Structure formats: structure tokens, C-alpha cells
Image 1: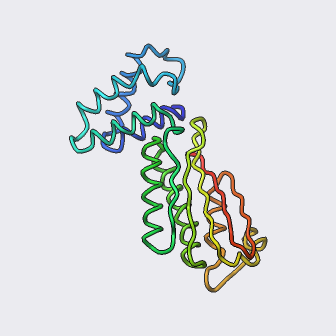
Image 2: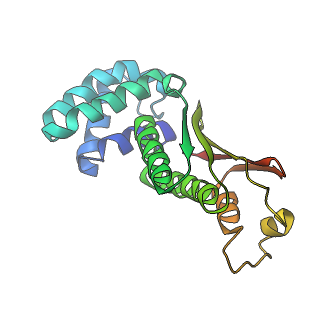
Amino acid sequence: MEQFEQQLLAILTRHLSVPTAKGMIGRAREKAGIPTDRPATPADLPRMVGQLEAGVRLFAPEAAREPMLQALRRLQDGPANLPPVTRDVRDENGILQVRSDVLSMCESAGAGSLSTQKAMTLVSELARNIVNYTLGGKVRLELTSLRPLRLRITATDQGGGIPNLEEILTGNYRSKTGMGRGILGAKRLSNNFDIKTGAAGTRVEAELSL
């Protein structure tokens, strides 16, 4: 099953069994006239979405129907229509807020459960670094492309910079306070990772394939 059908499956299996969800996708493919020798693509969704929505209304719990339908519509629109989100991060509430934002964005984009968990861990590491070692900063979340779908997380602060950054990124730095662990963990989770730090503050940009 290719990435796009995995996205559909991720949306449906939040509240439906895997066999039911796969059956709905199969019927939607058949209704849309998609050949059996190729996977469905985003271009096929307008012809599939009516059948998928009918399945959601038939099989999903009532309370889950509207969120699932909204996720299908957002997938049809594409992530370009999901606006970026920027949050101030100064305390635990800020960390919880950006985690909630990431979860909502991943669900809306149809990301799988493993990718969603990685995205939430990644943003938590970056946000917690801001809270633990600076007086505050911002985290921006943005979906950059449908194929492959990527989440870009940009974390900025006005702290005093990160000492021993090169040593931290090699994994050789050891700190009793834990400084550097979040940065290294974020780098390992990311598909692309860039960090700039100095006396005026730190900027981290991380991308994760969903």
C-alpha cells in the first residue's frame, strides 16, 4: 500500500477496524474506476471521497464521524490549505499546546500513528529545550509537501546560545543537567535538521516525513 492509501487508512482506522477501513478503501477504488495494478493517488481522491464519506457515516461511531469527514476533506484539499501554526512557548502549558497542535495537524493530514508519535516526540524535545534553558521562545509548525508529506518544525529563542554544540551533535557530550540531550534526540528523529546558535539565541529547523 503506497503512502497516499496509508494516509487514508490512518484516518479511517482511528475509529474503525483495519479490515473495515481496507474494505472501504477497496470499494472506493472500485467506485472510482482505479485499475487494480496501481495504487490510488491524491488525484483519485475527488472520485473516491463520496464513497469514503458514505462508509464513515455508515460504520463510524456518531461522535467520530465529523472529525473523520473533516480529515478526509483536508486531505482532499491538500496540506497547502492547512495554515502554519506558531505558538509562544514559555512553560509546560506551551509544551502541551504545541503537542496538541502537532497531533491535530498530523491527524488532519492523514499521517500514520508511528509518524504522529515521532512528530510529537520531536516537537516536545525542541519545546522543552526552550522551557528548560531559556526565558521563552516560539515554535512554528508547517506542512510542506504532499508527496512526500513533511512536517517542518522551527523552534526559536532569545537565550544565550548552546555551548559545545558541535560536541553535543556528535553524541559525545555529557551533562549532569541534561543540556544537549533534547537537541541530539531531535536531530536523530529528523529527516532534515539544521541549527544555528549564538549569543542572540538559537534557531532549530527540523523536518520529518509523515
